[in-house]
Length: 286
Ligand code: SAM
Image (cartoon, rainbow, N blue to C red; front, top):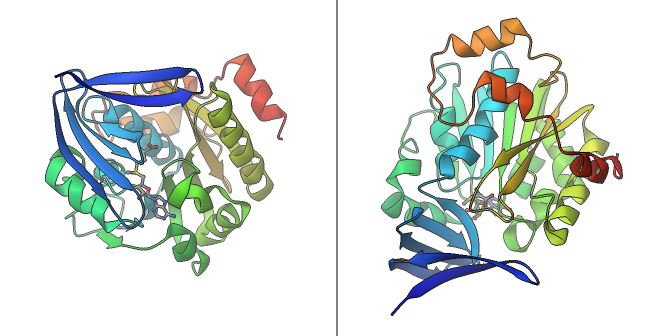
């Protein structure tokens, strides 16, 4: 019998992957967690039927959610990751010696438990002594923080279900407060292509623009996310990831000698160049 995973990307468009085996299908307090195995993408994790990561293309998302900000800010010591229970974002952050502490705030302990068992590729740095895992709602966690972090990464699910609060003005305002004077916030910014995702992107953008003086959007190609065209937001109190990414900043990052399969300093400059229709969608809310 042939088994296929199918995700509805719009009312009339679907994306399917042939499944060799289903490893996990369970309901947590917050969401339905599934792990499947495929020839094309290796193992993959879905939450409430939406793709979170695959073994084959997770490097693109995790490179881009981490390294753009790390190459922009010259001295990141304290990082807050909200969501990200699969560990991929923490794995990339842990490659930097300058990082002294990483707080990972994941609402659903079952995601971490399942990923520890089935995705050693992404969870491999969760035991790093700099990593502190908190199982609670990121919206609540960040409320009480002030002037604590150099970098906040919002590695959340889409703005439906438990992730909804992580796309609100209250949340972005609290992230601003939790950041130090030179702090940066990066968030996964949805896709510009299908209407439902584009509307989430526009809404998030207008709320972030209200809270931060520097707001830039950049893009990556992630084959298993809706339309494959995915955006990230970089909001900052001081550093501009394009204007401040000068020769010295590029050399500083290159001198670290990190090998990354997607990110590089050329791409850093290029990823902020957006297609006209995306610029227009964002401009409507600026
Ligand atoms: N790469 C992914 C994507 O964009 O599809 C995100 C992956 S990561 C698994 C997302 C995590 O955010 C999930 O494990 C989910 O439980 C967590 N999450 C959702 N809402 C949250 C909240 N309010 N506070 C903390 N974590 C949350």
